[in-house]
Amino acid sequence: MVPACRSLDTISIFALTARDAERVTHVAAAFDASEAYSRPLEGHGFDFGTSRNFRVGIPRAAQLQFFGNADTTRLFKQAVERVAALGGECVEVDLQPFLDTARLLYEGPWVAERYAAIRDFFDAKPEALLPVIREIIGGAKRWSAADAYAYGYQLKAARRTCAALWGEVDCVLTPSAGTIYTIAEMEADPIRLNANLGYYTNFMNLLDYAATAIPAGFQAGGLPFGITVFAPAHQDGPLLHLAAKLQAATMTCLGTSGTLLPAGAIETGLPSGQIRVAVCGAHLSGLPLNGQLTSRGGRLVSATGSSSNYRL
Image (tube, rainbow, N blue to C red):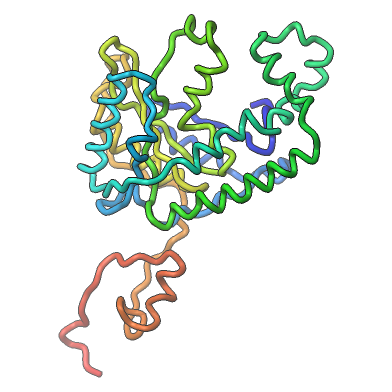
């Protein structure tokens, strides 16, 4: 990977199956002390991807954008139904704070960081860039250091606002893109159509989220459609486990290859950061000290009774 916005960059993993993606993630997520932006992988906690009881946020109908594509509208509705069939409780959520944050990526000073990444090349050979790229990155020069701080404060506030959602749901489900364009269409109207393609994704790195895109069927003309599930950072494991189940429920083959989707149990190679504990007395559900467990992300796995041989 070469830098675009070093403060936001992350490496995406492309794989034919969620299982393969998890194997690669397990290796790629290793901490690199020589890289200033590297950070240790944290445990993901509750694995909603393997649970039959989890909550999924679905954007309000008015906030869903398919840009006139009836096929993708239908396919997304089917995807929501599949999530529900897998045990997900679908909860309508307000996506507007996320959409507002997304606009910062290209309408704010982060474009100046893109300029910083290629400054020497850009200044020496601007004619070598595609016109649309030259136009976007060239606009970076109008931003000041004061603007960068002002937008940084705005992003900090946006992160706090958006983070409130995670008290209500475990992950959010959206289309990966509301529609797909041909190369000719993109060349004719690159800035507007690129913004459409990023409608559901441009906020991810700004908000420090983990996301997994999953195949979700084909449109009538043969073009694919995908969905994305996202959650806070370090939730790659649960997202990939949910992705594996959704892929198995949607596809029988790997893309259009004709190769059958491999069968097998979902792997849980990424660290959960959790341990199982048995408690009694005041730490039981409904009793005074139970909050010491729930406030730390503890979840009830099962309840049982004392052995019939037990005597006080």
